Image (cartoon, rainbow, N blue to C red; front, side):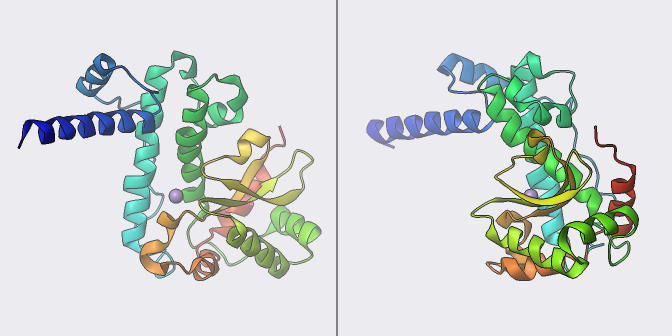
Length: 248
Ligand code: MN
């Protein structure tokens, strides 16, 4: 390697190290800080990846096991890891649940705020989402069924409208059914990893429409993926949670 090529390579590595740190929400670091951060072991807490409440292949054929492995073990884990790095870098974030962090987003100064928004949102959104999936029932029941009928006219109409919301997300994001402070339900969508909790809304259902959620099996066919989603909603669990949740 010539000295010029070596210098170029070193500069590229330096740029890469800075980019990784930015991703980890530590901000633009001086080279000395870069070396310190690189040498320090990655924090393993306070947040940890919750295990899936079912087997990786439990949602086949709608959601394939390989996607579930990547989505949970890699993508969700990365949000957890980066959130832990952010908490280590910003002591004001310590001692809070991830839901408290994202619900109080405006409390945090930058760059902690962006870290909570993206990494905290990613952890909170996925942690919630896994619990709503499964194979319990085929339609909402009880209070949730009443709330959906009241707002959308019928379960079928609700499915059409949630599908439209999911297909309407430009780029990466989520479609939601949320519970409003008055106890009624409505649709919402959020870009990237923004959480309804930040807007004061309680998530009831979620559809992850990031490509990482479906590209392996469905490629660009988001509509097929959303149709399949309705086969893997744990309606019994979601209906039970809706009935229990307070409006606080
Ligand atoms: Mn996801």
